[in-house]
Amino acid sequence: MKDFATSIVQTLRQRGFQAYLVGGCVRDLLLGREPKDYDVATDATPREVMEIFPQTYAVGAQFGVVLVPAPESDRAEGTSEGTSKASAVEVATFRSDIGYSDGRHPDEVRFSETPQEDVARRDFTINGMLLDPVSGEALDFVGGRQDLKSGIIRTIGDPETRFGEDKLRMLRALRFAARFQYEIEPATFAAIQRLAGQIRVVSQERVRDELTRMLTEGQARRAFLLLDESGLLRQVLPEISSMKGVEQPPEFHPEGDVFVHTLLLLDHLPDLCPMTLAWGALLHDVGKPPTFRVAERIRFDGHVDVGVKMAEEICARMRFSNDETEQILALVDNHMRFGDATRMKVSTLKKFLRMPRFEEHMALHRADCLASHRNLTTYEFVMQKKEEIPPEKMRPAPLVTGNDLIAAGHVPGPRFREILNAVEDAQLEGRLPSRDAALEFVRREFPA
Image (cartoon, rainbow, N blue to C red; front, side, top):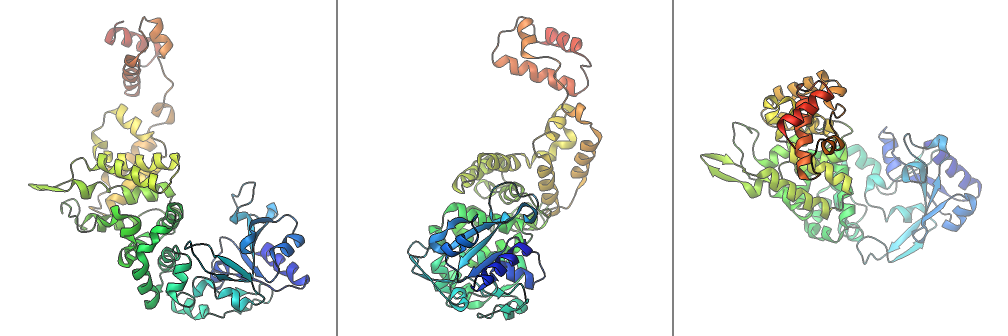
């Protein structure tokens, strides 16, 4: 995509306009990282950009933003048909923004002629640099290069002004600090602490997406420590904040309270962690604070059932899709079942192993162990069984169907499921080698 973005810059310049790479892609290139996407800033107006590139999409023309789709050969690997940020270059006109009544969008946009005025409206110094992709020269009007070198997250200009323009920037500051392992400049962090309560005006979808990036970019534990220290955690996820100080039995959890355990667990999530696994890990013990009690020892009776209900409420609040919610809840609901794995009947174990996306359940269990007692005996047992049992033994073709039950004189109803489950269990345990044996089992155990 860099070559395509460079060609856009060159084409705009050939038409007499200024044009540079800008924002996060410049930051990443200066850090020697591969940018996820590319943005271009120019003094050409949206109409002029669309005249030069006829295939553009005016996704935010009122704010001076259009998307120029890349040829298929330049698109990010895995990108499907259609235009997305990963398959297009965002071209934005130099501008200054006037007023932010809704805490996100400018009330008025005035196009500018200079890049200096344009970068002054951007969020952080490390995201406020421009780059000439032809000469390789970086234009830095905000001190971003020095902050990159020093490892500092700092707003451009007054932090309360920048955060007032878009409250989500408070979460972005923490995410960048965690992702790059930088420090947040004191005045910037103090402003976040003062304004933390205002994050509630941001849509839950935008908060969810920012938290998801924190959870999946590889520095989730530090991100959530910063969320806690800043005061944002109790605003966006009070259920996680409530884990602080909730003690656990030291014989099972020598690491400390539920909050400490949960954050340590995040450290053990795999690279390229699926979003559902990350949220399942974060919420797996969310039911512990309301079920905490001491009776001879610390107990959390029913914390899984309570946790599933709480996780469901959080998923609804955060506007997760039905499919995402189903998997997150499954992770919360089943994370304690590993404790019974070595004692499960063969049929129960096989059904357990064939749960959808079972690799996520395995990853959560492994991280859960490493963040507490560090005993992976059960994990290794389950892994061995999963490798030993062939697919046709894990999910064999049914020996008996509902039609067979009707033919045998059974009336359709709730008992059908009981009979079919019993047949399947016996089949999974190796007690029914054939269809005839299964039909005889039904006649003997469930006479019509």
